[in-house]
Image 1 (cartoon, rainbow, N blue to C red):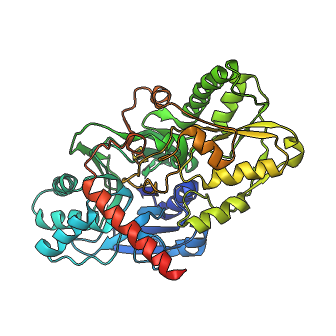
Image 2: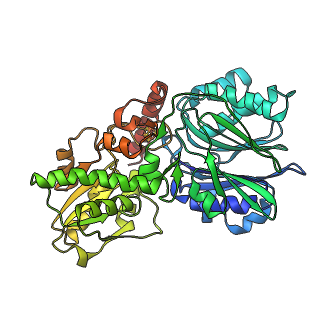
Image 3: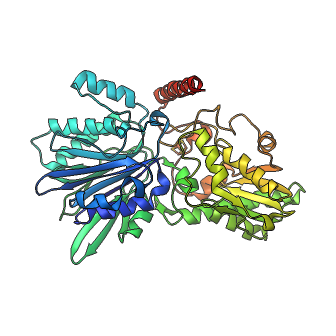
Amino acid sequence: MCGIVGVVGTPFASPETLQALMVLQHRGQDAAGILAHEINGHRFHHHKQHGLVTQAIPENVLPRLQGEIAIGHNRYATVAIKGDRSTRDLQPQFVNYPDGIGMAHNGNLPDAPALKEELGREHRRVLVSENDIEVLLNWVALGLGENSSADPFTRLSRSVRDTMKKAKGGFAVVGIWGGHGLFAFRDPQGLRPLVLGRKVIDGIESWMLASETSALMFTGYTPVRDVSPGELLFIRPGHQPESVILQEEKKAHCFFEWIYFSSAESTINGLGVHNVRLTLGQKLAKQARTLHSEGRLDVDVVVPVPDTSRPSAIALAESLGLPYRELLIKNRYVQRSFILPSQALREQAVYQKLTPVREGLQGKKVLLVDDSIVRGTTSRRLITLLKEAGAASVVLVSTCPPITNPCYFGIDFPDKDELISARRTPEELATDLGAERVIFQHEDDLKEALSGVPLCTGCLSGVYPVDVTAAAERFRRLRAEDRSAHDANV
Ligand code: SF4
């Protein structure tokens, strides 16, 4: 999962991209980059580095990133590229021919190795990174090179259509085509989000594409609409967007955007994240009331794990008539534990990032609300922290149903061996985590909360919207390599 941004039509394309990347920081904290383009003069300017946005792109590099088009990327490393400190795999990526093309994406292509191999075998293209975007970029560039006689939008449409036919998986892409404009496209299932916004200042119209509406609103853009699944958008400076649906398939939006990834103020596929999280809390309250009436639940305070679960915890407390208390205080300067690239770093971050409020916890029977339970690292540590700080008992509530299968579309849910809910009943899980009880959202309630939105629920059910056979094999091999590298280092 990553954050992407594209801006066209303003001399402030790079500064606005930088601001938007800061707002999307929660989507990836490993690295960030900007590619800017001056149409007149046909120059590209590139900067990318590891670290948080403000570290990776200090403001003093902005004067170098000139142009009326820019794209930006926040990187969240997945299994294939963890731990590599070179900038080779960072985004945006760029190829010279034809005209200079740069692209950045959010997502994952399960068939990337086969597509890469075909590029080398059939087209003598040499790829240098392990990043799927380089595969997409080369397929798009190849198509543009072959379709040189038609008008630019037709050329781009043909090229992206051919790329979409080959590339199965989750991807939202922003790109710059040198001398022409900004383009964006989204996978036909709509697994990864992408929204379009518009701004007019002093009669000058500019456009932004971003992973979330929060980035649009922060930078003064009015959200116009989601980019549709399978759609290509092409925006030339001073022109209205041109668009075409290139491929239509059954939609399957990633439900985890509403549970965890997106900011509460964002609207994803037409559904407000904050409202969905409130509804998820109300659904959980129904379960809690039933358990209470059966004498199987005894709690006296609702405590959220900040920040994502807060709206759900508030709704849950309101529905149950219990006090809501912020008794875990977050250190804002420590990275989110789930998206750190190793188990050791995740465990260390959990110790550092949340501090319990001792005076509020003495003798309390806590209903602890978290967005999800993936590896169990955070939950186990938090329950220990709360009990050490004086809590009499802890019941853990997850706003997400049990995650029992990997994700092959850009979220780092590991294999079943590491997914703590995959091989335990909720009772066994409670014992393992040190909780009195674990309550999960029911899958039906999750679907009701996201009513009307067609969903991917592959990590819950093991049934995915695209064939993942090759991806599963690739992930198994990479994990095995990861493990043997780890074993060799201990
Ligand atoms: S498998 Fe789960 S995390 Fe991955 S895209 Fe589907 S819903 Fe999202």
